[in-house]
Image (cartoon, rainbow, N blue to C red):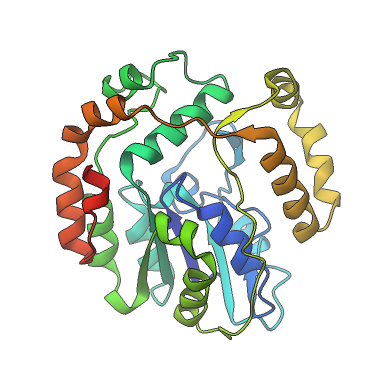
Length: 287
């Protein structure tokens, strides 16, 4: 069973970190990156197994099967960003796997919300083309409230459930600026050889807008069975190929500074609380 969890936040580099860790010969990362077992699976979720494009793993046998190919790896992990916002996930992980190491990545909340908004738009799940309007509205059914609840209460749950030496927090900006250093620190944290150097030159699951929307729409409309044919490609090669195509296909869309200034009051209190909680300077998030 896993002893390492990347719990989020979503749109904050979790896919890149999952990929970098998975390249290490002493690390085994789940072939299903986001099984959502301790959030959706253990919550009694009875909806479709494919939830937001991801497969929900629902029971212990199915979850354990994800790690059936583990041999002599030291660190065994998975990455499900729903574990950070889910109010019960930290307690469930602690109850079943109390020695687990928890890895959390945090991103400027407005930039993270904007990245999620662009993703929702690309998937056809966000009807509004106005990020400011979408970020300010109340939650409406399945439409996300992009800046809801903040980081501090979510972090607090993990810091209450796990000793501080079992929780490592990274900032997305640090991962962007010097991924190699962040990954070395993570290797030390999970107890594997930190001299191993994965290919951190590539970013994975990059955000933005597709350069060719029609091609993206065609891919999004493909049935999951057709997409799953790519599983026949070895994991590392598949990840590298997807990353290359995505870098070519996506273009960045900067957030207008005027929009950011209007949203800063929403995130100010939580940013200050998060700063105090983790002992890191987050003033750059407030300008």
